[in-house]
Image (tube, rainbow, N blue to C red; front, top):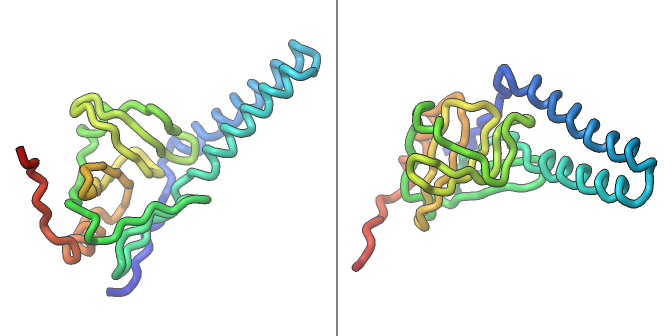
Length: 174
């Protein structure tokens, strides 16, 4: 199988929400500098804001690569890789299933949606790598961790991956 790259396309509202985030971050950096007239408190506050902003920027999902070795979710600075033997299942996820997800440590709308989220319906922690809130594919690894990626070509990515994964026994031994 040849390598297939699925590029992340931003949703309609993502550029606007990203601009609002940037305005809020600049405002949060400027207000303490004006209130405290400079000094170490505003320097610390600005440093924290810059660090959070840098962490968010470095975690923005860019594309998903599927090849004969596995799946690779590529962000700006980090990559999450799944070998096919580590994947228990892959399936489509409806938008309704995603309506109960709450961010725990992640970004919502800043050039996408990514990070650790809590699914309030199943009370499970999930990892989300999405440029838009919709057209999700769920990858469950053999340890039971769930990863959600947004992909325009859901059927194609599922078909490619299902050909390589082997069924795993997910029952617990008691």
